[in-house]
Image 1 (tube, rainbow, N blue to C red):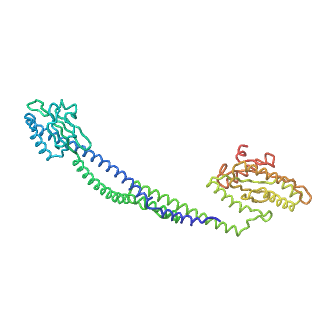
Image 2 (cartoon, rainbow, N blue to C red):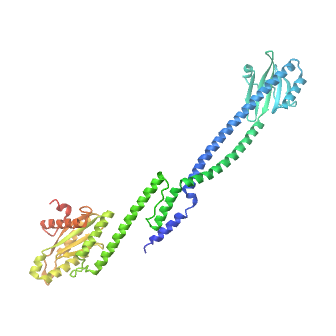
Image 3 (cartoon, rainbow, N blue to C red):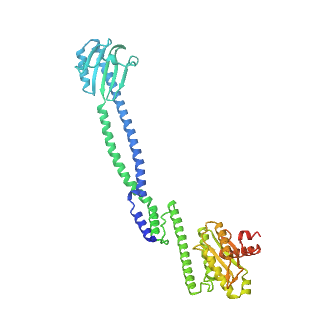
Length: 444
């Protein structure tokens, strides 16, 4: 049972119409654009946040250096007069204005002179932790993840009298940067959300003509109505695509109308054939009228679908001798026997016709190759040449075949028939009871 093509088209259309929205072009482009935008914004934000953190740490470290230098200037007289209590009070006073973790004052001999907090005995003397560059520059620092170490040389009138080691925490500045980063992340998230909505809206507008064109293609595919046309919104790439699509629909519509007209004409011709005698009354084969129509159809199919077909023009040998010697009744019996013998060696789709007198024509559609037709010609000749006894008399009947191929030799029915007829006469000249091809006959 053949499947219902209309049902298949409707089912296919329902499947297409039921495609999830996630597969739409608008959403795919929105997702891709949003991904690119999000990655760009997040990367930019990360770079800005990182740069801000580094800048804030650097500013905090510079401020710690300035505080340490100011404190060193204040501590210089106390070191000279060895006033440890005043130095401790000075450290205590300075610690209230900053994020200090620890401060130590050491003498030139690396002994702790004063420190803050006062119970910070676990902290090493400042001189033991000083960097090598301190001796040359007079000030040095060392950055850590959570704090910064600052070393300053304490001098009085250019003479080194001690060392100051200051350790200041960076937690507050880092926390402030993190808060700003969190606020920035919230704002970026909001911006991405707004961008997603705007991108979808903009791309829906921009891609609306393509979506309309896709919907039109689906409707045409389901309904097979080629009179529909796409709307051209503007003369850009999509507009030109819509124009070409409309031109294609117009050509298909015209072709379909011509095909329908041809089908109606063939149906009308078929009805006329039904009213006429399509059969030869003697051999019961299709007659010349049927042959002409059938040849037109098969030639058209062969050319359109690029299928090899062949036409055989068959003429009986010595038939006039049979009529003259044994009479017309014997001749009629010979024709019936020849028709029966040829019919036995033919394929199901082959069309054997009697054109008149002792002339026959055979249409061979959908051949695998030319050799198949040549082999069939030999079988036909052999079948006809088998001994034929009519009323006790041996009939000296043979057959000569002319063979022409479509579209190899000709591409229209009259010329194909003419080529087969010429090939048959070439076979007659070659000695009868044989066949010749049109392409070979033209060279003889």
